[in-house]
Length: 237
Image 1 (tube, rainbow, N blue to C red):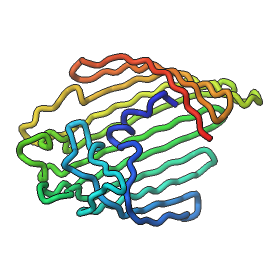
Image 2 (image 1 turned 30 degrees about the vertical axis):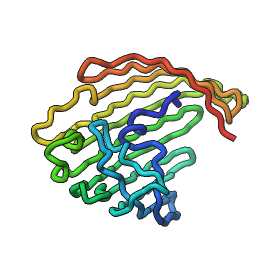
Image 3 (image 1 turned 90 degrees about the vertical axis):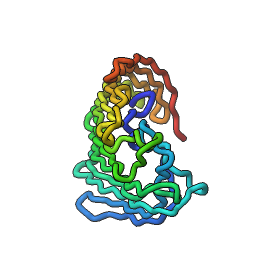
Image 4 (image 1 turned 135 degrees about the horizontal axis):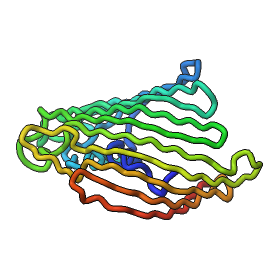
């Protein structure tokens, strides 16, 4: 609902992550669906203390010396409801200049839409095998464990009116810890442990267009957080 995607989905789960690979997907019955893919892994040489997102590769430019598995299982018990889990696992070593960098990501996610209410929640945990991180250089500061979560709730005050328009006030609370755990001897960057409270409003004159405004109160353990006001216009066709 926000003008920006949750920080959890921008940093800990790299947004617009695309990759070459092969996979299968299907329905298992009783509202269960699955996806499973074998694909090129991340490039661990580009990991930073801010997370793994810079290690994503880009299809035609990918180096695939190491492969990874990704999968997802979703359950739709009722219309408008989804509960699921997804994972990514593989070696992020894409060259002889790197040691093994076993990288694993696990998330639990859910969404509910009911009579004008909508809620989304996600919990994610990423690990990078600390035994594979070099003793010096920027890779040494990569969090061996990174984790985050968010909960977002909104309500369409025009629901039930028969109008095609929607007016949705919402609130979102999220937590991001990019260095939840680090290698021995590494001092955590306190600015990388953030808590973000977002409150805003979405107006949809028609279902395909959204005008958004929200306010972020951003705090971190280094006490260098800032507040941010955002406006956005979104549409699809």
